[in-house]
Length: 423
Image (tube, rainbow, N blue to C red; front, top):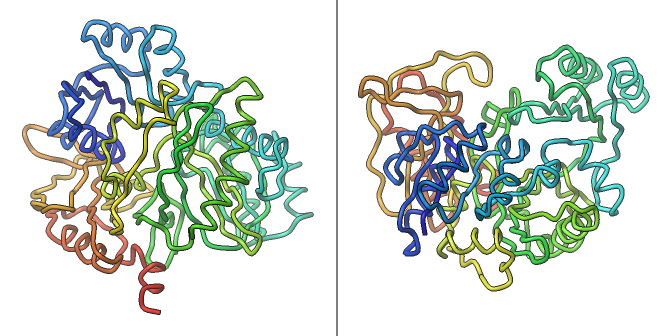
């Protein structure tokens, strides 16, 4: 099978690494890719926003299957164009991708199909949003409606924070994503990520993970795209997984089909486990980053036929087998992230990782033969272990063997799970 992978981040490196292990694969291309992905795939300089160019490449190279990594191309409708051209693609239609593309759309789906989530209101101007916030009080959550690269959400613990977050959205801090704002109730509990494949009529639950959104140790500082993750998330007990499927995922799949937006791809449910049970914080319509890295490290099954089954309506014919061992990833980011940071800083050396460990490239490039950091989140030191503590120790061993002066990371990834292990 000839495959084209779209994307260039750590998630896509993890997908490329796993797809490259498939005996079904005959050729893997990636656009635009990164130096890590280049170890697994042939990189092609293809403008993935130019859908006719992507289709022309697929026809020229006899591509059997396209795997779309990031959310922006899905929201822009790349999967629709590929399907119209008769090319199998992993990822939802533009209509179905609204689950991530519009926070307000998702909240409306939850209201319509009785999916547990925080109470909310949608606003298209600051004065009305602020009046509602003053009425509700803090803590409260302010979300830019559209895609904001993981940075459009403020969990405001004070009224001043909430009002400032509303100003940020409407004054253009998140561009067009902030033209509408969703204000929702603060949910108290423990966050978890749940991943489940859908082909529109069948579901295949994958695995759970827990992300670390805040930039600093002890969950301090501003939200980021994610500073590390581990899988599985102990808070997601078998009972909680079953409830998530019945109360959240299944009604979403049925509801989307009823609305004429049949969902094919991955449901990535960001959950809050509250005293009442699982409640939906948000949906994403692609694998998480950095959660994908720990999922791929734990997946024992061949990834390629599973993704292909989701794309072709045959998900009921496949299964996914997982390693019992937990996996943990630590994000190395450029100093200054999530604010401004220096670009093209040199990465002198990366460690050789053994079995069950890998440094995934996220924001890297080659400049005159030198590996350099080009993004905010740059590398993902990922490892499996018999316990979360063991996986953590191995991941930080990899971190400490990276020679990159402009890098930093959190030193406490996995702290909740490790505290549980010590009980």
